[in-house]
Length: 403
Image (cartoon, rainbow, N blue to C red):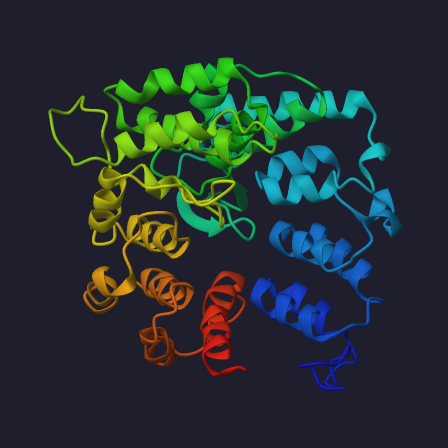
């Protein structure tokens, strides 16, 4: 078969997915995995992705059915090599649940200590120590997995990613170490301003998963902190604490709604003012959104007004999140004709805002979504989020035209 759908490359007989792994192209790997149902090559592709330090691709292969348990230890990297890479995605692939039992506690402890040394020393300083070079260190932002980014640093012939804080947090959890709120916050704040950095995300999600009063209280106390990065960290932890609460009582729903409604009020006051409408909603990441309550919330007048403002906020991530919040509905949300969808769509060129606005129109049964989607064109190759959002337009057309 051809490369587009088959398992082999007619030019050299190599599996197409193997070729895509060698090229380090996660978008092509995803397309090939989606189109081909033959699983025979995926285990070898997983081993190759790990050997080549392609953590994102290794994770994709696991998602599409690669069996890590069929690999031999000598086919993969050691845990220390995984830590040295600085890639959380690669390190987590090495500790996939199917092969995690291969590693004794002593190896996990060594990995923890190594990750802590990288994190506390700093990537650039450790690179200089290992290479002996005093040259400038090149820094490049890269995507580490589907949702998270890291910075890649290169000095001489050595290249390392800066996700050691996330690796340290992950291995501590495997060792049942309860890291303090303050230490996790410090790790995250080392990457302040990078809301999708793996270390920031790992710390905030872990604290959100704890879902205890002590964590909630510690995060809430930061709401009036003069440091905007700490306020943003607080907002994300509080949001996730509620979002990840799957208990019947949902104890954090009421306090979360009160806090975030207040937080999204108009800007005002001096530099220590806690209200930061441009940053609070931008904590949304990786498909998790401010509006995802266990049931549609009853928005107050202040909350509705705040959403209207946020749909035209200068920050594109804020606009996207506000569009999605409105799309989710809820008591008191105005009908589409009264919402600034055209302004959001036509005066901003950022595609992620346009896609979210189209999604919002479709969710609200607004026929403008069809023309807007046509102007956007097909979803970008490999973007699961765009595919999902634009699929809502097709669902709207089915509801409109169906029996």
